[in-house]
Image (cartoon, rainbow, N blue to C red; front, side, top):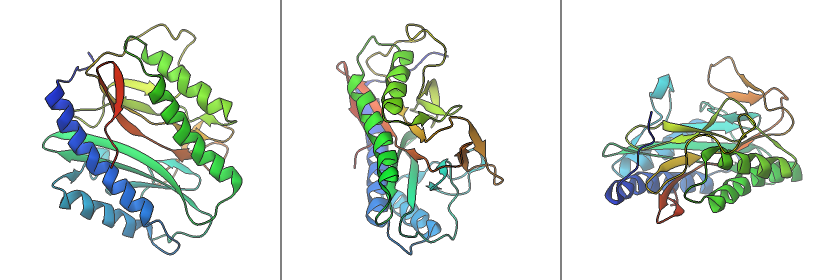
Length: 252
């Protein structure tokens, strides 16, 4: 399947959908406090999204029951909101999708709850910093496999490893489009596969494990953890290639 090249007016529609994602994530960041439940945070984000004229695109997607993926501590991605109330020292990942006028937005952050350990601070920083390093490295003409290699090098240089079997992706009229963008080089040749071009819009989302890249899916069929059983982190932005450079669309 070909990777769609978006016209400037289409990118603006994607920017509008993604700006709502960024605003909802910022709301959750500000409300991440000891004692609040994951379901309360999910409801706050859904209300914010709908009040801005959009729909929470994850709700019902592939059967997901809520608006926000709330990934607590060992859960790296796809966590289902529960009645659990945040405690000092937790870390919590939020992943949010929106649909606005038929266009989709998607981004994620991981947030500390109160004071967390130095290791958890490093874990969160790895996801955020590797994401921004990869975005800064994007150039028209480079291959997506080269971008995956940049992500892998950035993650591993900080002493962590990328989660396998899950990846970044294209986005547009659907929440997940071509191409798939792993956070590691799949194979040995970074010079193969499609090239990055003006007009492409895609999500980069480093998913960080401490020791083991192998994923395990928990009994609810959603929560994804590392085989090492240790805490993980996740950050994501939607980016568009405009005039040869990557622009982040999913900022508040």
